[in-house]
Image 1 (cartoon, rainbow, N blue to C red):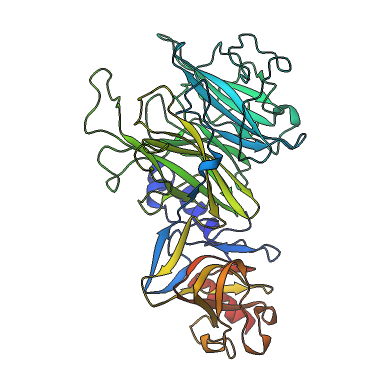
Image 2 (tube, rainbow, N blue to C red):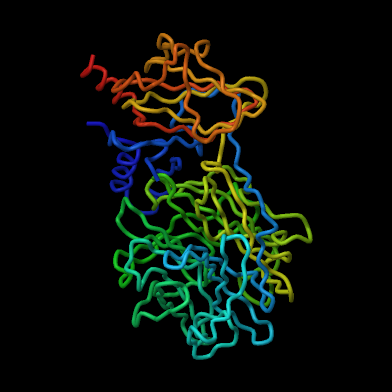
Amino acid sequence: MLINRRQFLGYTLKSAGGLAAVHASQSFTLAQVGPSASPAADSNNVSSLLFFDDWPLDRRDHVERRTGQPVWHPEATFVDPDLNVTWGYPSVFRDPDTGKWRCLYQGWDARRKRLYPLVAESKDGLRWHSPDLSGAVPVSDRSYPNQVLPVTNFSEWSPCYYDARAGSDERIKGLVFFDRAGKRPKSYLWVSPDGLHWHCIDGVRWQREAPDPVTCVFWNSLRQSYVLTTRPSLNDRRIAVAETKDWRTFSDPQMALEADALDTPLAQLYGMPVFPYEGWFIGLLWIYHVPPEVNGESPLKYLGGRIDSQLSYSIDGWHFQRGLRVPFLANSLPGQLGSGCLQPCSLLIQDDEIRIYSCAARHEHGILTPGDGGLLLHTLRLDGFTYLEPTGGTGVIGTRPLLWKGGKLELNVLAPDGEARVQVTDSKGKVLQGYGFEDAISFAGDSIRWEPVWRDNLSLHAIADRTMRIEVMLKNARLYGIRGKFQVLTAAEVMRYEQQHH
């Protein structure tokens, strides 16, 4: 029996139990086809290797791991003409009934000193406008034409969740937080078919002690549940996880991540939207780099300081690992939106690229200035969260032994002025005849699905159901991912398989 990395980790965590297991067992990698370092054993599935850590590798010569850099598109910036959207928490989706792109967000009214739940629309998800819903969507206390909810029992909401698994009436979930001075904070669940028409589900409390945002939701196919990343309690800036299967009952939060000694002094974890990506769970972790001491007006409350985001990742969508401690979405230049706070909220794949929608501010945390705040778009190549690149000259990486099931081998490579070559070895590192670096057809260019070939038009289509290793030579090139029908094996699994089949 082959036990993949995800299965083994799940057994270990279940046996160890509790918070200690979370800290002791974090060691994973990322990628919606199969886990990156632990592909499922189903031969009909394609597996992906991405490079958040070295678990799937057993060779790494003169190669560095680096964090991807999403590209900002200034032309897609949306600034609400009436309200400050510093804490906009944009939720972007494409309405399947109309084809319109919609962005649910919230805006701060400085005169009324409150946030309003709003919507913007677009034909392409790039250029946004505020629709006038006054005649089409009844809201009891409408103050703005694009307001979508009444503000009675509304203080804030987190990024909304587009639930493709739900019936149309509850397709979109809004996690609303209400905090009246002197009262215990409450949580409410609002649902909508289209982001415009909403109703509240009576009696549903998605967290007993409602935290201030940000709470985010994703579907966990392994647990067959919706997982919420949230704060353990009000103003407790750490990351906890909870879950629901029916959107009526919710588990209590369990601690998942907190700032540690590798973070900047006094750093806090402000929120963590998580997105399933090829069988992995990628977190965009908001890091609040606080000032050197708390604001004396409120215990443990900071005013000022910047927010950027780093990557986290998980193989089971419950226990998370931190990646390189460098910004994934870094603060922009002074005077630009995002120079003070930059908080990614939505991630979608469109036209072979990843779109990331964020809320951003020029000023630092908690400083609300008229005219500040906007919603930004960044794009990223597929698999572009991390990559491997030579430190200079030629570098080589090699995988652990794989159980190769046959079919295409595809690499995501950027080498417009360099080259990449692939060779195949047996499980012990001996090069297979005809599949060496010297036999490989060199690749130069930019491809997310490059299929390597060797002399005499050899490819891996000719090989199936055997153990092997993949080695990649890079020169002035970046490697983002490897895909194929394979399973990464442990040493014991290699020995067992080879004894049974040879």
